[in-house]
Length: 318
Image (cartoon, rainbow, N blue to C red; front, side, top):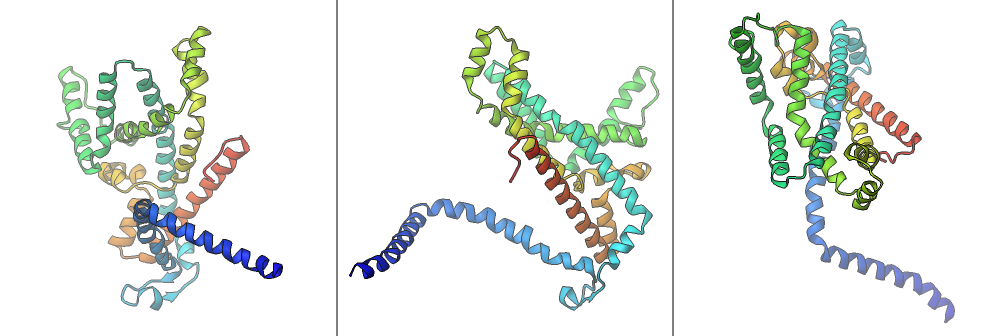
């Protein structure tokens, strides 16, 4: 009797666990429905398209599809690495992304620190709203604004410069100056929105630390240096790791809209080159091989940055 009781006990506990799980699902079904939407999004738009990565190893024929096209192994990658223009495009992508990282990454941190020091509440909210707004403007509109502002002939800034007797500056046609305009437009569009994360991280800092620092006679600069920045250090590290993962990934709209034939030596990046090779020239296999190479390099940077962060005692992203 004791043996039968001990044998039925695990089965009873499993049944209780299943019942409790079912009760938990019914109780929190709204939360599961909410999480189902982002999961569905990632499955449909992130995981299912991975099936198309097979095109990089095929002589893809649009009429035969992925299953009917001939497999060519690494021939597309050999052709890609043999192209001289590929290395120029790779250089431009790395250059613009690294410069963007140096300029655009610290900008939201600085803005968050400045906004955190504001004591007039209505002005702080107004400044936040004003800084967030450019994020909701498409790059097509931003490109038009940049052209109206910086065009050599008829641009607002050059009209003002011409009015005081200074020759017009080729903001959009001289390569080095174009890079500065490109970076400035990126900061203006993204910095305000990025401050949301850092402002949220700042709310988690214990206020008693600031009170203790005031008692010790610390000013705003010392409190920012010794309390605020260390308090959001983990957030900065995580976002930096994510940003390094995008070091090979560059948006299509920004370089495509702001670029022109006179600055193509710097403006031609992987995304615009994939568009020209894949869609305009219909070389789907070559474009897919370039996209797959881009993704693998981005994965390498994420793993490397996460490993370095853990070596220095940070949490990382996994």
